[in-house]
Image (cartoon, rainbow, N blue to C red; front, side, top):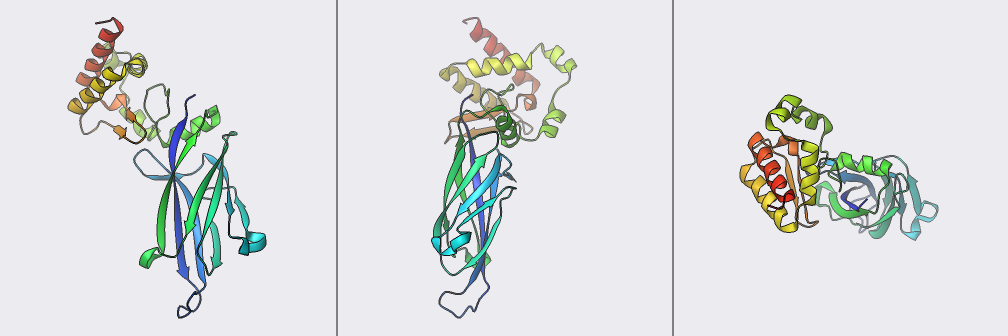
Length: 237
């Protein structure tokens, strides 16, 4: 199984709880860990089984704190800013992922700020892979597409009558699209962009070099066009 990439978002909130007239007033702060979905939405970070916060040595016995339930929220108090690192352990023996985090008190009037961290899951096992599918596409997915919302996908999934009418096997179409050459893939992407409707779901991740599409949200004419295209290529035409 190829690597799977996701983005983790850390949300930090802080506020003054001591005398605001002091040069370094006592502050209360907290941090939460979230996962971002295919459309940038916040999702539970349940691909991780625990988070370990490594704080400044001045926290003494509280310097290392472990949390085992999303959003892995830590709450503390202190006077100073500092750099920490957070070690996230993925489920199903998916390894550890270390995030460096700058705890600062520059969050504006709300005292809140967010940071995003890319995370790569190398060769995820079935349990972790299933959890990752809840937040977006994974390489080798049966439909070549990511599962945004399974209930929504089922609503858009066509019935057998439509597939019989189109004479298209969607699973074979998905497999064929994954096997096209790089040049043909560019043609496929252009074809989709030129013929998609407002119901069509696509995601173009330029940074990761990935293009995802929900085949079941494509209009009939485009499904047929893609099917004919892949069949021609398979026949060497």
